[in-house]
Image 1 (cartoon, chains in turn green, yellow):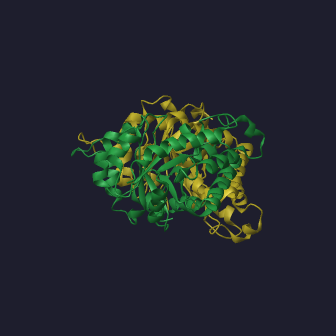
Image 2 (image 1 turned 90 degrees about the vertical axis):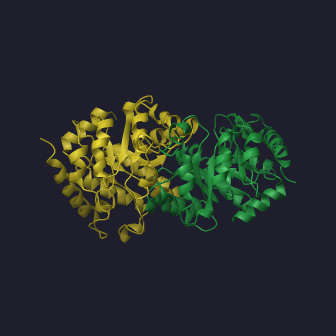
Length: 271
Length: 271
């Protein structure tokens, strides 16, 4: 998928909602546990119920790896299901990978070729040659952690150098120099709306993947106020708030309700 | 495994060698490709041939994920084989994971419980609450990226704050304040021997996992000069230099030869 396809989808759906598929067998409706692959069944029903309201789905790999090989099978079935049935959807492997060059290429192959995701989240700590191998894949996106929504995000990301430049700003600035940097997007937590203005000065045109709305306390309005750009430029993620709206047999319908609430809030930003 | 078990093994074997199991189907002897699970067969023969010379094995997960579900099966068979046949060996999942609290717990379960590794490498960018969930697992170790061996390692890790403290030093300092910090080890690249002295001042007692010997140009003697502590305190990793010593049917024997060369170099540090 290229950037224009994503922007077009956003405008058609009047939505920039990303749904996080972080599946926990202890939280899904218990009747699904009788099925062969409860994780996939859960995802399938959520996706079928929300695909016209969301522009992206984002499984976090941790939730699948925790179930070992069965979890990876569920992940593969989920991404295959989306790619086959809803090819316009933008898919994000929330994997937070990153390693030295040769090895990052392996991760890129795993997520871009074997699983065929449109994008992957990547950690910046190891620098340029840990990220550029991901950027070498055409029509695939690398979503770099910049300013994360968790408490510990402040431990290192806002440390300042002698000129007052914070680490996350350095990450943004440096990343623009990397090869194929137009295939970069960035993770910026909704819990830090005060930073969006500054961030938009450095990367006015990039898409931002924004977790932290809902359960973590971030506000959609605040994020939009400073984060929107001419292409919308935001993918607002909600995971638990949508997928666990109900633990009964009506879970998919309830999830749709929550997704619709957010899509309605987003609609006002389309003229 | 606890730290004393590891130290004991090091002293018995007079070795602090870690062998990186980064298996690439294009590089292994081609006769193995006829077998059902060539990755596992390759690992098994390498492990059988070197287990008395190495104290740790370190599969890098990228190489397994690149082969999809089959790769994960090979990884599981490999770790199961080591745990069953060589239970004294220290095992490292070189996975460079890290996410917000709840999610890091999932990764910890995947690697410490489902796969039963003794340790995992973790990226520090997301701070305390992305690492502490790993440290909550008793007798398991979390190996934090500090100063990596790649070129890009210098992009952010040596950025200085107004007091001249570099980011990797901040990571070391801060990590000592985290809960169960005695279960931390650190990745420090062999390509940066000049930094070991400084690092040992901050973390005199911790084990360091040191990649970058051999193919990447690091020197064992230089690393030992500044890095050794009273418990040895180093795990020197070699991957390609050992496992791809030969691409013929004698590959395991040749790998043993390379491992023996390194073990002999290490022996002089035991009095």
